[in-house]
Length: 299
Image (cartoon, rainbow, N blue to C red; front, side, top):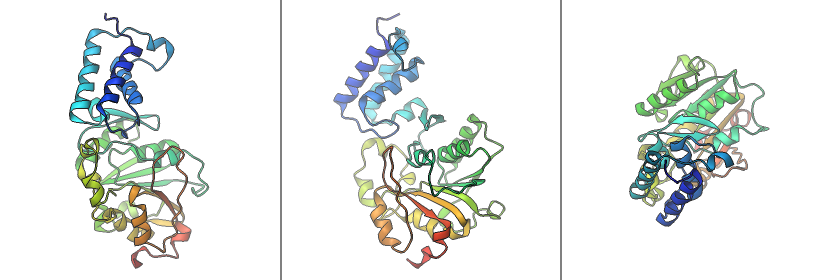
């Protein structure tokens, strides 16, 4: 047994992260929280006074320091090193090749949105990645059937693992399809409109792709890059959105820093920009009733 405690190990790793000048944003936004996430994961300790004073065994100290070293040297997002992350209070498996869960849409879903349909029985999660948003929606709306769509087979494999992890097989369907190829991507699943549609597609424009920190370049470029203005994927979704919605449906999309480009591309669409109390940017809503009087294809 070493003399290292959970608290002292967190302090040590946090100091290393602080001096290394890392970039955050994959579940944490500062060196202290990143160190806490790493140490608690390896030791299995809880974030409370009793466990913080617990002595850490030498092999665990060495494992923590080894992972911290990789985080610093290779600028790999911590969830990739741990193989998991916590998002919206839920555990998700994570691995390289699939974007790390972090969308502010999840936090927005947990709020009492005045635009939300009174009944949410059918949910569509486009560009689902790890499946995190669809799974969060399934927990918030326990009566809903959720369809997860992605064109990346690795992402769908991981999403299926996360669906199994949360024991949601009976309510979640997975579809391999490219949302830029037009609708319907699956005739059987599109026989009825959806009450709630979620989309966190690639939206980073070409200029920003060139300036991304190393931690973000460690994620698959196909999950981030979306052409010169960041709208290659989202434009395709919006152009056919009306076919998937009814008058009471709600669409929640994320466009990040490409929001100004979105407004220029679709000046007539009735976007709603809700406050994001948990941080983030570029999340918008479209109501089915208001969308019915507009056609996104007139851009």
